[in-house]
Image (cartoon, rainbow, N blue to C red; front, side):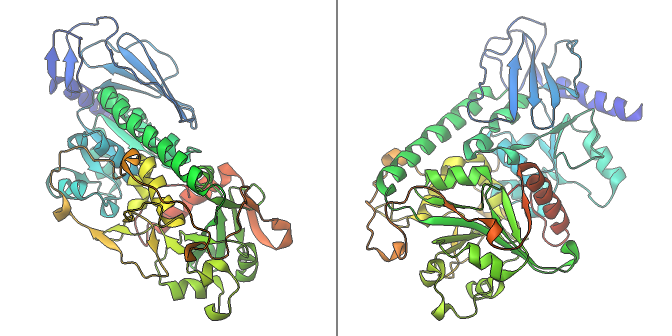
Length: 480
């Protein structure tokens, strides 16, 4: 009863601190209403790309469904009666005045909406890269007291809503909302989760504007890249190395990822994907087997949790002498890591902004795959050229100019850019096969692998790995 009472109190406070409005016309993200008028939500959102959530509007409430976890949430307008709806996991009065987030990607969506002043508690706080969220952590946002479960319970109960991940079995279901944007099969689908979070703040108009811009900009980049580079598509492999540790029974392994959203990104960037016979991820038990799969790859994107130099990567991958290597990704030095932007504590922005801004992610990948695609030059955001020893950029609170301003999309406006035509004689395309448009298929039966994972098992394994690795370097939850 204590827990329910505390949650009910939080809900009551949510309404009492918001300004009461006698009219529902032009309902704002800070307004309660004084009567249950019909059709309160004049601005609505429709889901276009996302596959894992849905939203339906009623007179004074919205029904939000997480389709991947089968959770249903009813968001009812503050000042109106709680609706009689069955089989609901949580009733949340909106717009919420206080929110807690266990994931830095959730915090990024809220910042993109300009609602970061509503965040009262944040998990994995040291890993947050956003400069303005770092500044808010100094005075406004309180990190969860993760070493004290009683304190965490109290912090959660004092918020109107707690955004959590499905791995937390102890989550309080009375005000907990599960988000799974990281499981979406497309980059645009991941970014469209801004609408999921916007529903809690009555920020439909803002979400529609932000995502509409992302969607059209992404489409423009896709069209440009595929027009210019359709006949010159390098093969890209997303790889990682896990050194021996207590989390893998002191046994090293190597992995190639074929997550769905990466497939879309690579194709949309004007490149081809290394596909290990259709699996979401393939894990190898030896460097030799791993290298065999990379034989015809042109570009490697390394996502290992350990940060190392180019020479160290080659050593971990089993390349003993680069001067004698026949791998084009080695001879051309086409190796990247998505770790360019980091927090002081080593948190990666790769787990934050690229999820919310798919157009910027695509632009950055095009920049890695086709480095001269913009005539006036391109400054990468997340992908760091490891062979060129590109520096890591550390982001701190001092980089924030307005901590309450909505986070801006870091992508450039595609329609305003001039693109260069691909030149097969350019050194960037050394070893790239021309006029090849299909994925490169590697038959895993050719070598021993530890396992060949499907979508679900890969999601669970990746989440478990990140939770375990948090003991070493705290990061946000994301499926690679």
